Image: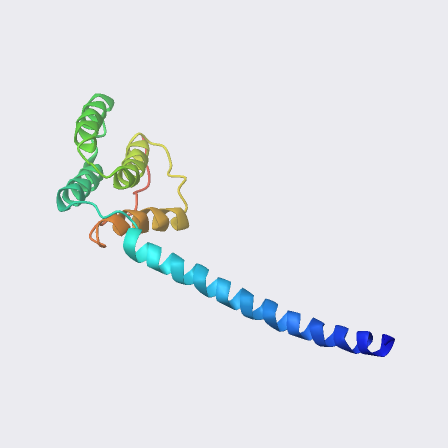
Length: 144
């Protein structure tokens, strides 16, 4: 009787290992398949064409920030008025990040944004605008 108990234990262990592996593969498939479907259905919010156009216009304006403090402050105030008109908050955040760095550079501060961080910001903005946003790299700060 003790012989049959010892022979069924290794067989059950092998069967349990196979069931565990099959279960893990099925659950991984459900997880990754569900994630893919979720991204297809509810992925990155798509901004309106007006939001994307406004975002690009603000980015373009950030290429020509005045050097004088008073003019720069007035330009920033005008930028904020337009920035508030962007309805998609995620796109708005990416534009804000880009423009704030541009204003900092215009004020003579170096950009501390890494190339990887810059690429992520551009990719995030483009995720909302079907890859139509162009964000030029920030120039080096002006020497005073």
